[in-house]
Every structure is written in C-alpha cells, then in structure tokens.
Length: 147
Image (cartoon, rainbow, N blue to C red):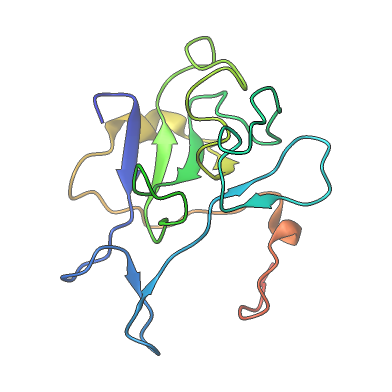
C-alpha cells in the first residue's frame, strides 16, 4: 500500500480469508494486543478504544519488517488469513507513537533477508517462513506445536 506496507495471504477462491473446511464458514481471529508489563493480552479492542493512550505494546511497530495481522479497517476482530509487513524504518514509526501500535496484532519481525520484503509483488509466492523464537508462546489446543 503505497510503499508503507506489503500484504499477502488471501487464499484462492470466492471468499475473502480462510474458510474452515470442516464447517464451511469463514474463520476470523480476534485482535490481540500485549501491553508491556501485563501478564495476559487484551482481546477484541484497540488500546485507543480502551482509553489506554499511553500504554506501551510488547511488540511495537518499530522496525522495517514488523509483521502483523491484516483486518478490515473498522472491524477489530476481522483478521483471517492475511498478514502485512511494515516497510518503513523506526524513525518514521517510533514505538508506541504511531497510528498502528495498539490497533493491529503484531506477532513477529523479519530478522533475515529483509531486502526481499520490499521487492514482493502480486503473484510472488512465499515458500516458507520460520519461527526462530517465541513458538512457546503459541497457545492453541487444536494444533500440535512442532518445534
């Protein structure tokens, strides 16, 4: 989107997002924000909606390659299959002082080969992504964590 982010992850088919093959229904993921110092994340509301304007997020949009869940602009809990990466450096998006922190679920950072990120274009295929740390934080009883 105008050199600010690169977005991907919409599966082929007539629907937008991921359709659960067992139910035939769209699967969405709630907004999840972890405030620095809190023991549990906040779900379903932005920090702004909660009046937490000065709260510091544990994973801020502060670096080229910040990875977050894409969602509809006015539906905090509409994320499904699409992700986006920030294409700006931290001086343009200072931690907890930009319009993205506390509004989108950040869940990672590109740590290698970030030069390829800015070159992604329509039709490119991301063949693999590897979690290098933090997999132990994934809590989802319906999936077996391999690591």
